Length: 322
Image (cartoon, rainbow, N blue to C red; front, side, top):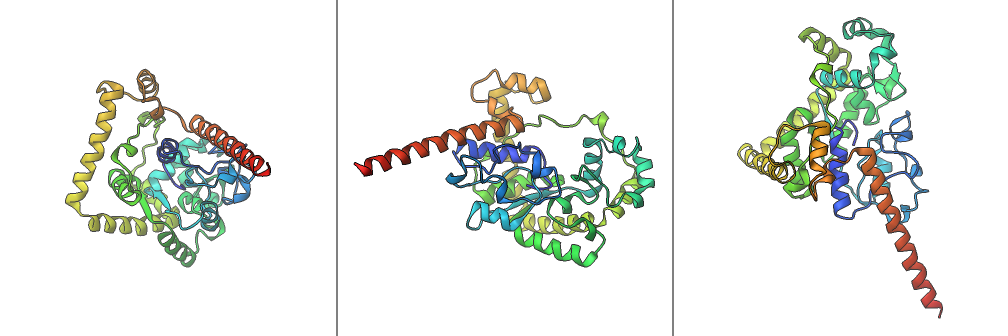
């Protein structure tokens, strides 16, 4: 799930957990750590072959990674459904600038000062993870080719071909509807709550000129976004605008039902207060578990499942020897 929002992996992880599906997870690392998102390496099957649950096979790949289409198809087998999400490039860069504390890394540069030095920072990446044209980087595009327009166009063609759905952050509700129908899930499977959203006062306010300057610097990401946004709009049109509005209301209704059940109708709770309230009610805790804790729980369950399967296999083998 490159270029994604934090709650999207947890949506799919929760679905896998509830429906007893196996998730691709390494034994030693957590979902946002290690080789998955901490180096220039691409996703590789070798990273989880030592996991005790590996022999069970996998149904879902939902952690953040640097995309490797061939390896992911190999890990999941068959012809898996592939999904990612894109975000308006200037807005996306502002978000990662704050999240990764770029201003500290670059000698306390303010955003205007950073924008004045863009040319000198083109190939710099924070801890080999974050930097210019983040969406293309996450999707596996080589950093030295960021300014090669032909290669960017060819790679965008491959992204359009390889992904069954490219969602759009700015059209999140519509994205959820298209995803629901692609995966054939129920409305209740798409209920989520923002647990770690940034506070408004921490966000950098970009002027129109600053945003335009960023988009020119992020021209490769901007090309990807503009092209795939058009594909998304075409998908929405083919789905039908009237039908889309009805489906959005269904998703909203499902979320409101959970709010009524888990929060007594309190819609404005966020962060710690939301978590505290939801943990008081049976069946609601699953919505409040953070990514690291949740993935550790999934690992534990898969380990238990693997041990049970091994015990059954051994018992069957012993019986056949009698």
